[in-house]
Image (tube, rainbow, N blue to C red; front, side):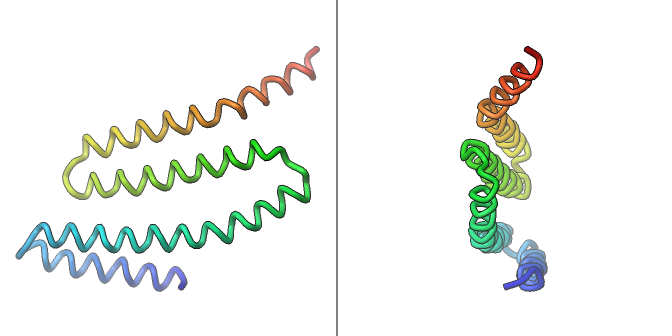
Length: 128
């Protein structure tokens, strides 16, 4: 599938959800959530191909695996957090969506600590 397919599914879901909103509001939300899940899982499939290429690059330049795993965790946290936030905000629960965003940002900060420490250690060796 391509971006055209995903865009077509998204636009179709929006049009159908708009029509359902006047009759049964909850069906509109469920349709939007289902379309969002479709796009989410399709994106996860694309991510597998990207991971394979990045692992090959990592092997070629002999990058520390900690950096790669940290980067992938950050991408995963961002992707899942944005997805959950979007669902919350679309369903009228903006406060909960904002809390998920804050938690996601804090999670990324916590995951990035080893990289920041490695950077500081590298700088320290150059300065001493």
